[in-house]
Image: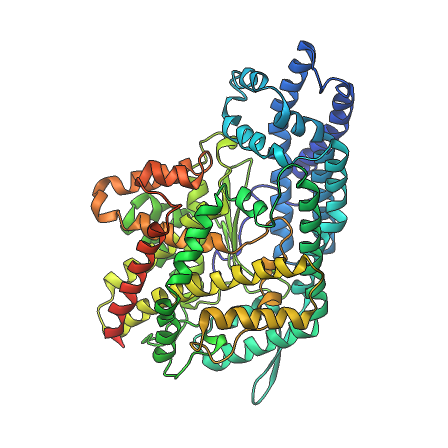
Amino acid sequence: MENAAWNLESEYPSIHSDLFKQDWDFVTNDITEMTKEMESLRNEWGNPSPQALTKIKDILKSRKKFDMLLGNLSSYLYFASDIDLSNVEITKKRAEAHTLWSRHSQIMMPLYLFIKKCDEAIIQEFLKDPELENFDFLWQEKRQQNIYSLSEKEEVLIEALATDGFHAWSNLYRNLSGQMKAHLQYPDRTETLGMAQASALTRSPDALHRKVAWQAIQEAWTEHKVTAAAILNSLAGQRLEINKKRSHTKERHFLTEAMLANRMTPETLDALIGACRSSVEKTRMAPKMMARLLKKDVIDPWDLLAPGPEKEDKSTCSFEEGVRLIAQAYGEVSPEMGDFVEMMYQKRWIEGRVLPNKAPGAYCGGFRKSKEPRVFMTYMGSNSDISTLAHELGHAYHSWVMRDMPEEKTHFTMGLAETASIFGETVLRDTLIQKASTKEQKADVAWNEIQGAATFLLNIPARFDFEKEFYERRQSGILMADEMMDLTDQVWSRWYGRAITQNDKMFWATKLHFSMSRTSFYNFPYTFGYLFSLSIYARRNELGAEFMKTYVNILRDTGSMTPEALVQKHLGEDIREQKFWQKAIDHVVGQLKSFESLM
């Protein structure tokens, strides 16, 4: 596929290049020097002298370069590893980068705790420095979390054990999934594929490919279900144990980490999930409509990611055609957005190849030195692949419009990140349905809307309920693999009801998101982003020429505001109230009903 291999060489020609070695040497030497600097401050943290405060301020400023360079090196190693998980040299170097992060965090722990605990007057004095003034939001956020802080020794121990303990479980999942093989049993043959390739086939327009690939993935993970269960139990067990330790002053619930990571109040999450739960009978219309369009009585689990069945031309869309389609759709909203997609393609900042040892999934990342985004996926030409690409390019555009901002103001939460990506999908679907001239073309685009509703209003809430109930049970002891399957079965029945032929009982194992060590509850932010993006997009006609300006302003504020404050500022609404989310869900249900005429 032309231009489908991303260009990482523009950042570092290789891990053996002079530029890579130069940055690597800087961070390793810096850690050595910083160890000495921090040791000289050992007795100063309780009541620092003016000289010590000056040194602390200088250290804070120097950390900006360190974070930028090690972040850049880590991105390169992550990207290079994901296109070939069998590359031992890259994998080892990536592990070394993780170790450097851990060592640095341990060394800097006294400073992190000082920022959380020191007098407000010291913070305000630091913020007067032009090089530190943009840390205001981040530091105040950290200081509010001080209630859960442990002693320096305890914090250092947790960090020290994380690399070869906590994060090792997540790495095990990635390495296992990258090297597992799916044996596709066709009536006349057997094909063996990597998991990324097999996963891509679950989006194939060919029903047999979808069924066979789904079954092969199920069988592959069933063979490794004991390992998959051990990974989830170990990740949850460590989180729960650390939460017990942090509950010395106030109870730290297992959802607290996710709430803090998303800067969200529990009231907002309750309102979001509550709106989905109260609308479940209406939103089950989506999988039922998918089944009818596939000419089935009830949809099968291997059809949940299928492309639209009414496509007149059953051939797949080339990578270039898919990119150009998205560029055209983005351009309908803003010429700058369309140009951005074209630039991503021309500069080869998108990875779309089908490779045997490639990591499964799709994501958007970036380089902190050049401020260049990168998109990763396995592209096989289905409508779902095009939608996924539009999703990830939405992420990339988010980071692109913030590239001129201070780094400290660009750390946005996952829920707000998913708002930008799902906005990209919405723009694509809206443009396609406006341009559709035949009933078949309209039905094809409507399929994507229906599928999106099924995913974000049923599948994602089901993931949330599974993870929530798993954590509740895990507090009393580990869950065996078969118990995981039973729990998934119960949760899927609760959300899908009879709208599906069978529940995907192995979803807890096949879905990478549950096994990520750095993020717990990697689920509800998708529904948040879906409904919030619809709320933004609904203002397009109302705002007219001001719409794009408003949207970009929202994106640029995501790194320095809570979601509640952001929505209040730009849309004038309260997301802690269920009616905000219900309004967006009612809009989706209305769309579903309008699509029934196409069937």
